[in-house]
Image (cartoon, rainbow, N blue to C red):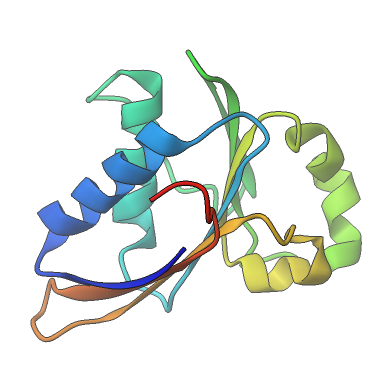
Length: 145
């Protein structure tokens, strides 16, 4: 699947996250790209709240810890922020291979290099026409829309 979506505001970004979460399966990797302030945290929060079934779930940014783990009805979800990662060779220390059995949401996937699998759903959030507007470019998951 390849798509380009105009997201008018934060609610639209959250709606996209809900849509993706409802189609996610164990073993999936969602690679979330975009500049600082692009809406990655908004997407991640809505995605993880939907998967957990808890609309008030506290979803801190894993910017400093690099990884936050969540137990959900779908299984374990690893939320990784690779901004501070030294490079793909440091992924093993984080438990990258162990996380692959569950669901992974990866911010700044560019830092993982070739470790992002070809079957990942790639989402890039770009500035849109207004302050809260975004454009989402999606590719991957050809069997799910």
